[in-house]
Image (tube, rainbow, N blue to C red; front, side):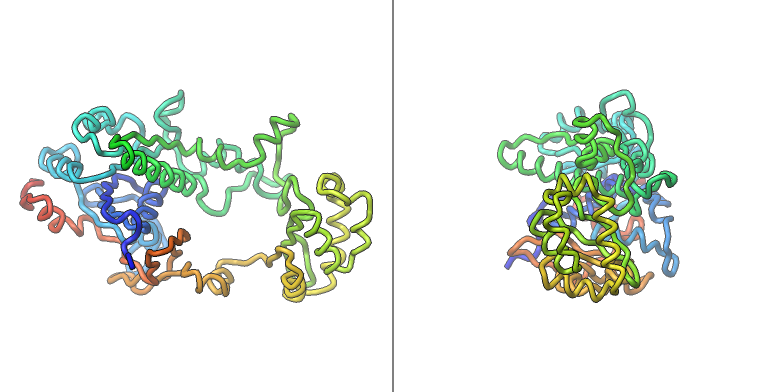
Length: 389
């Protein structure tokens, strides 16, 4: 059985740093690609300085850069440029997340590289993409969360703007970049043509706005934060119970009927105010009052047992400790081990992309130190170590 992943044989020259680009190249490595991380001599990726730290090494950096190789190159120095160009000769893909124009100043923009390396796919991740009036502006995750509208629909009504609790701006860009890269690889396999993949973090946030944009387009009303409920489906929200909170997702009429029966509010099923989802959504406050009054009588665990038995989608609101102990996580191999020589044993999130015929190991290689793989890479390129001098 193949064990190396569907991208085995693909070589990625990775100029990215921090999160959006490295998240993409982590996923490419998870799918079997060889990722050679090109870092700034000395300091390396900025994320090496982000905590938490274990024995002086960033666990954050390890989690996003596991399974990669590292070589430190100064692309303004002739010797290091020669090494970089030798890498590009053998690579399938180069990926960078500099501000637009930076690679051109170094002499490595898309047009020049495409002429020299016609099979090399060029991928750029930036705040705003390579076109448009904001293209040269810098951006971080929270900037595009705010600019792309997602913060305006997150949190409780009337509360200050709230950041999504993980770096959705960076991670979404990383995921869309992964999609773009794989599409470009497929296109090249069919036609022999390499293309440029241009990903803007703001574009990705707009794409993730789901029904908020179409709701505004259809109604003219500006969506706002709704706390723990869905804007278009009722009942589909967080409710209080005797000892905490529970999510009940009555996503269609049949689910609403089942949930109402379990909760002992079957009288709601034939109430004309609640006959359809559109009507329930119109009368959401009344549904919430009925459901919350019923749910307050018992604990979250007691209700979950009954709702699960009835086939109603429901969950408690887990914290991170709950998630890592969840009975579904282990069988899906969604916590994998890393044994780092400095940081020791760590657990990180596994690969959610399960493809038949390819192994999904329970462990991963750790992230490299800066320039750790230099000698090995130079030997492969038939270059002497002093080539960078």
